[in-house]
Amino acid sequence: MLELTENAQKALAQVIAGSDKTIAGLRIEVNSGGCSGHQYALSLEETPPLGDVVVEAGALSVFVSPASLQYLEGVTVDFTESVEGAGFTFDNPNAKSSCGCGKSFCA
Image 1 (cartoon, rainbow, N blue to C red):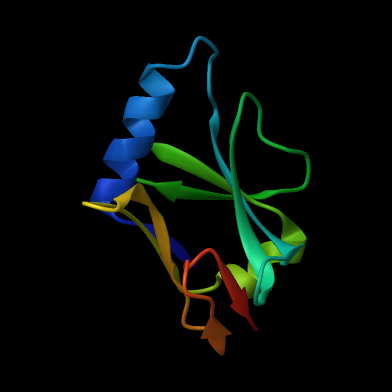
Image 2: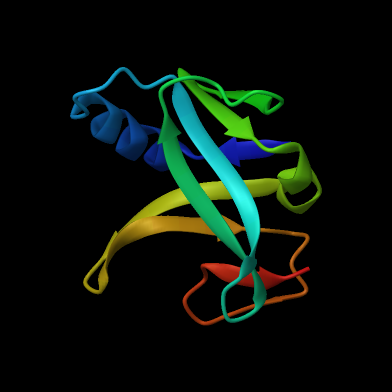
């Protein structure tokens, strides 16, 4: 369904370890917006949101809203660092096109 690379898992583990709250997992949603029509939203959750599908990615639980499932099938989430900065990237086989920043796509 959805995959987090080892780099993404390590980056999230560092963020979670530095949090002053107990984190149950990462929530990934796809919302309307962005320059291409749909955009990704990531949030750390203290409890699993009611009704979300839970995907295990290594030691991390990922929560996906039911409305986002169709857009996240087969997606690989990575964490990259470069001279321009660091951040999460999405390889989405369902996207017909995406914007230059890689944070939004057209389904």
